[in-house]
Length: 382
Ligand code: BJ8
Image 1: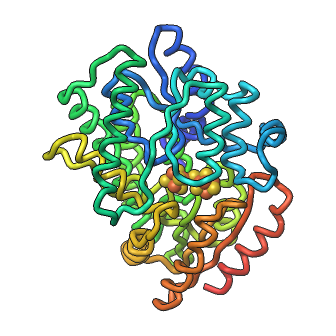
Image 2: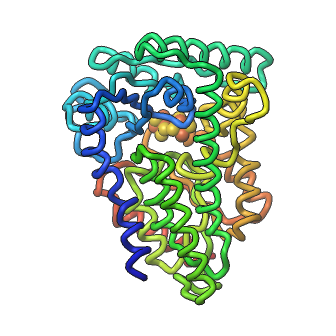
């Protein structure tokens, strides 16, 4: 790999750690930080309030024992880790957040926010769970207005229509660039590994200067395109092509993506929250900004919605566009909504003769061997 490309990738891989220093620097110069957990957060409002959103979804098991003093053991590791980091003050993003925004997504998260509210200033948005309900869109728009008021009050800053439109433009530009980046996965033979792709997609959760980030991602895209022209592929055109779906991957990238690619397959697309689910749809810049935010965010096809037909439709489209040979679903332990939805995804893909496997795991290392064996067996069968 050429040095420039390697150093850019390194920057994204280390974005979370580098961001720790940045966030302190920002606080020292009086900037406001808002911690967010979920793809449903309309982060445009945070920018429009003159603050910076930062992702709080914790991705290591380090603080899980501390969180289990208050939370049950059989709870999703993402929820336990997030709460654990707040409890132990070990995450600078959480520590420096002036406000934390949560949404009523799954039961575990919304109950955890009650305890988190004892440690931090937490604002919970009431998210409707049936987007087909005729009141859902209006209700969600109201929730967006309530958040707008909260941010204005908290940061003593008026969110004008102009500022909001500007923030929408900024976030759409980021989405467009990232979409172009992950579309590199369409190339046959592949020029980018799923592991590298994931590092970049996660790194952007911890960068503050979005204009600089966009330029860096554009440079990466150009570099990978050159590699394609020079026939510098990372796998052969016959390597099995994998789509990842399911829960957020942050805490299990090394456990899942590495063994898939070490077994000779290549992850070409992510349907989950670091990929298409979050980035495919833009916010409409031609209509009222609150209505546009309401539409975009309510349309996210997460399993906490019921019904959630959008997820299977998106998987089908990605399978087609990225020439996918097999779909692997990751379910974090005790995530009921994804675990229940597994049957619907399996049935949908079986009907189309698309190989599918679902894998339940957590943040620990104890099942590494078992996970690797199952992944290898699936890939061998493709
Ligand atoms: S939009 S995927 S970030 S809710 S915390 S639901 S894993 S039991 S994170 Fe999520 Fe928003 Fe949906 Fe994306 Fe399951 Fe764990 Fe709940 Fe989770």
